[in-house]
Image 1 (cartoon, one colour):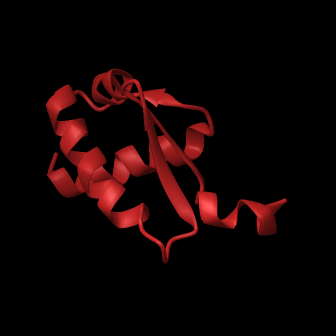
Image 2: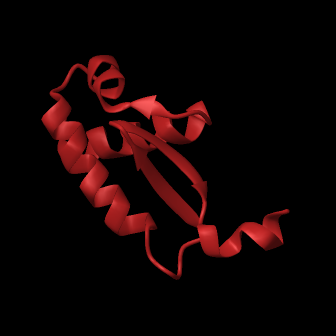
Image 3: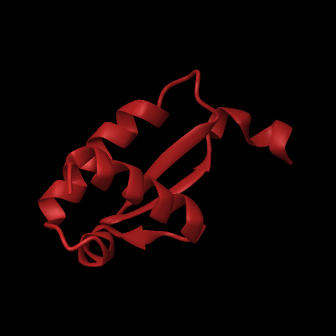
Length: 77
């Protein structure tokens, strides 16, 4: 599986879950190393965690979750 595949599948797992998902669990599901998923998290953080994105990738204690960018919480409510 290419890193592009791992990235796309990781993104889908995080989005589909709705709840925080552990990096180790994602690695287990995709049969790859946690270190590979950590690299994917770095890429996805750069992709989503900037002022122009309405989506934010929250990383908490080796768990990840997509959420509304903090700057846009009010319009969502």
